[in-house]
Image (cartoon, rainbow, N blue to C red):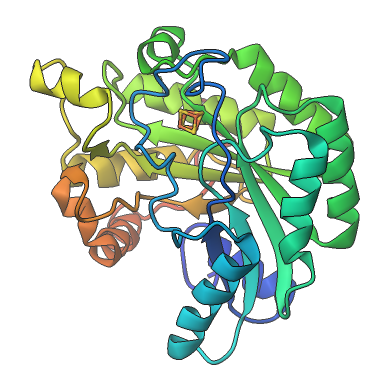
Length: 308
Ligand code: SF4
């Protein structure tokens, strides 16, 4: 197969090709907050977002350099070889004055075996001085910026309280692309009130914007999130495994072959995940997706030239 035996263009394949060996991402919590939480835009946050701002797998430690070193040392116990990408994951990682951002990003830039930096943010948190800094970093190392889109359906955007517009997302992609910075788009499958067509519409939209990468997340219901209220009232359901597997393949069939798939499921911490519990067995889910690709005799981009 074209992609190291997979039927989709995985991040693992892309990074191995680019850097010649396995590359591990190290998730960091750089101590940011989010304008959707601190009251600047709203203080409620996106309804699915965990109290740790989706940074549940980071080491709890104020010093970013130390966080990176601790995570790296832990990984080295298991894998002797490999390179690293510092992943600024928790909350909104461009939401601070540019000198603060500079200090945080540069604190890991010269780490041994670091080959890149990934920065997760909101589309409405990329002012021109921040773009200038990202441009500078992009010249020093491999950089990608992750943008939460989640859905293009306006009613769902309102329901999940993401508090940014589709135009803001489109504009951010344009600016980042003009500066030669790779963009990875996050989409969530299984949001309340969405059916298969809604989710496929979102993925087709991302396919058309042709960002460099995409993350397809299974919606996770986490403890202490506003989404619990909807769930308790019976106003939403969690996806079943078999349905999700087919849905994810329906989406991947519509993505361009060159688009790198960074994620095909979700990673919820065992102690705070309410459901779907089947997702805790991530490798089993990924293996089931691989098997279903074969059973359906399909692959990434298969439907891209056909009328959808
Ligand atoms: S923008 Fe990100 S960090 Fe902020 S509330 Fe939404 S998911 Fe959480």
